[in-house]
Image (cartoon, one colour):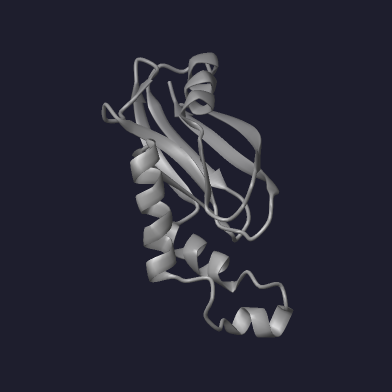
Length: 139
């Protein structure tokens, strides 16, 4: 077994900005020298998350509206009272979303559904540079 580690950096806009990172992950698997294994994708920081969705305008809008219904920006968060940074909602959203995924790959092809893409969601209230750690374990 071999482990390959890579760091991917992307700029985000915040406010539930979603970025499809499937092409970057695919490129790294193709360049890794591995044919079969698992890809672990992890975003650092406490105000962003990783998931898979069908990355199309309707679902992107639905996804953002779901977060606003379930974890609204405009309610009181103790985090905001303590730190004064007005992003308590982004921490809660990110913790519910989760910071990582594990996806198997065979013959350098990830086991994703036809319309399934890997996305990073930046929940923070401002633009950020996000660091995504990719670890590939395989042969």
